[in-house]
Structure formats: structure tokens, C-alpha cells
Amino acid sequence: MKIVHISIPNNVVPPEGYGGTERVVHWLSKAQVEAGHTVYVVAPEGGDSPAINIPIPLWGSEEEAYNTSYQVILDIKPDIVHDHTFSQLFRLRHSDIPGISTHHNERFEPVPNTVYPTQADARSNGSDIFVHHGLDLGEYSFCDEKEDFCLFLGAIHPRKNVDIAINIAEKAKMPLIISGPVRHPGYFAKKVRKRLTDKIVYRGETFGILKKHLLKKARAFFYPSSWESFGLSVIEAMVSGTPVILSDIPPFHEIVKEGATGFICKNKKEFLSALERLPEIQSSVCRDHVVKNFSNIKMAKGYEDLYFKVLNKDHW
Image 1 (cartoon, helix red, strand yellow):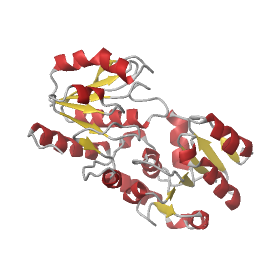
Image 2 (cartoon, one colour):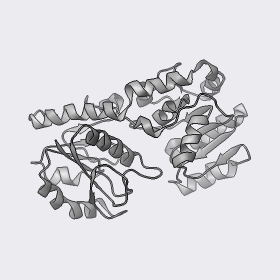
Image 3 (tube, rainbow, N blue to C red):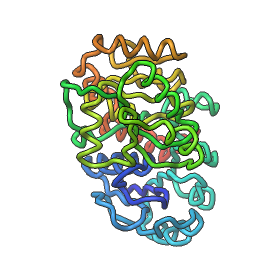
């Protein structure tokens, strides 16, 4: 099958650091290449993807990216176009080309044949079509010997509630490492930076060996986010053998095995209780859960089934 993925212009594929959409595009396209498909990725030049790159300007607008790439896509004559952008310009302007779209962000423009990364996200948008995100298992290291710190890994933004993670860590007298790009400078200045100490540490955006080390050595992964369509960092932590302590939002109930790979908490008391219950969690169970349910191979199979539905004129 000849497949074209259209990524967003914010980063290369795969991204070196933060970039959930670009990382999903990479993991999915890699699994498809390994399965024998001919795969193209519309993305800025410079990434280390096994797919064939169709270059677009880095940090250009999605309109500029569309204008740069659409004729190349048409000339390729793909069997399926898989659009991961927010504006969905190609799908909207070339509805005669078989295609599907993945919902990655709240700014997404709804179009036919949209796929959601969790059942909860699908239901909240009036759909029942979903394929769970999956990661490349070979990119992560496993460890069951933990160090004395908890980890927050994600964008520094009010929606991610880094300040709640700080509150819990302070109350529990547990060291906390915060890692991620600052997406909201005002929030960082008022709610995070003023509270940094020798035990509450901000490490900036981490990637590569350091990111893997933090994920596998943390005693727990804190993620009290108030909205996610999925939450990639949750499966990144679990595949590294690290239990997760999360806020009570619907997508997390699909990703976490409550009491076996982590805890979902409604309030401060439950967050503190979860820290005390960490010895109940086995690191090997965390990893096995991801291996079984959230690999990029399983994700690719789910999307392949939907591609064939579209090619057989079965739309949703």
C-alpha cells in the first residue's frame, strides 16, 4: 500500500525533544515501512525517519505547508492519505483522495473519517472510531531499581497542572523533577519558577539518554493533567517500568490498569495515598501492559484495518 502521512510543520519527524503528534507519526510510519508498505511523510527536512520525506518549511503555517506539498502528494497517487494536521487542509480540499485523519489536538478541524486515540476521546466527539497510540518499544529502557524522586514530563502549561504536582511532592516530602518545554511563560513564572528548590527541580526539556534515564529511574510519574486525548508520556513511563499517578480524566482509564500499573486520583488525599501505595506496583507489570496494548505495531494494524474500510468505500 502507498501511504502518505501529513505531519505538522512545528518539528521534524521524529522530533528530537517534545512533540507528541510528530512522535506518533514517526512510530506509525516506521511500523508501516517495516510491514512492507511504501510510506511518505510530509514534514520539515532533517528527521531520521525510514519513510520518504516530502519536505515542507519548518515552523511555517499549515497553509504554507499545504501549498508546498499538495502537488507532490497528488503526483505520488497514494492509496491513502493520513492527515495529522490541525487544519486538515489537504483532506478538505481533495476529498476525492481516499483518506483518514487522526485527532491530536483541541484545535483540530473535524472532517469525515476521523480517528480518535482513545474511546473516551471518540465518545466526547460523537464517534466510536478509535485506535490507541502505540510507541516503538525499542526506544525505551526498562529498570526496576528506582531512585528517590518523582517525575513530571510534559509541557509547562496551566492545563497540565504542574503546580498540583509540586503541591503533592511538597506535602509528601518527595523530590520532584520537572521536565518539558515552557508553553505558557506567565504560568511558569507565577506557579512553577517561584517554588523551585533543591528538591523541586526544573530540568528544561530533556531528550535522548537523559529522558530515558529519568523515565526509568523515577519512583513514580506524576501527571495531573486536566485534558488529554491520550497522554503519550504515560505509556512512556510505564514501558520504562515506572508506575503512574494521574488525574481522573476519561482517557487515562483506558491506558492505566488501576492498582497494577498506577493510580488515578480525584483529589489531593488520593494523590498522597497513591504515593504510599507505590510498593504495590511491580515494574515488570507496567512494562508488560504497554508491550501488550500500546506498541506501534498494534497501532499500525488498527489503522491498516481502517485504511481498507476507506478503500472499500466504508466511511464514517
